[in-house]
Length: 185
Image 1 (cartoon, helix red, strand yellow):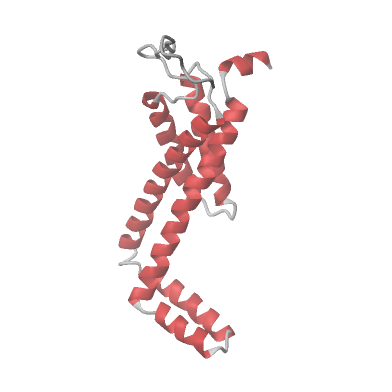
Image 2 (cartoon, one colour):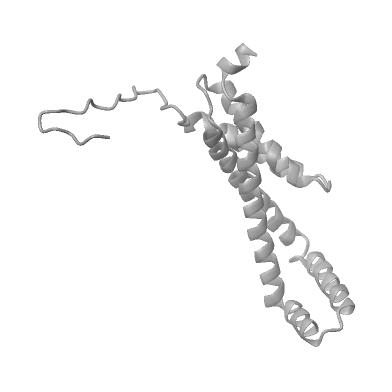
């Protein structure tokens, strides 16, 4: 880009009219309800005991974009779809974490979960004769160790919800991108 001469003036950027969304932008007043509905559905789907529950996070992100696309007439870029998917994943994770916490409280302070974790740690420890591994397993069996395991698990689930829902949102934007592309097909 050549430097400006003293008398040369750059034309101003085209302003976006009130109520319009810039290309690639998101109308969050329409996107948040779509993301919330998808987040609730992700959480409900995770309560179904299936081994493919991570797939529901992908589907949830794409579903949020599809719902948003029905309310929005403009094109949805994969980046915008990923952001909408991430919000649906975050909302789904919050509902999941609350549901998980309530289930722990209802099950007498998490006694059954605690017992299951302790049993699995003991099984793993019994298969490994290494004294250092045995010592580490003993530390994990303490209340602090169990809290650490649960905290790490929740962080991993947060990452999974955000990443997979974002990917699902980007894929949903490609599939359900805009009304114009759907009409052309």
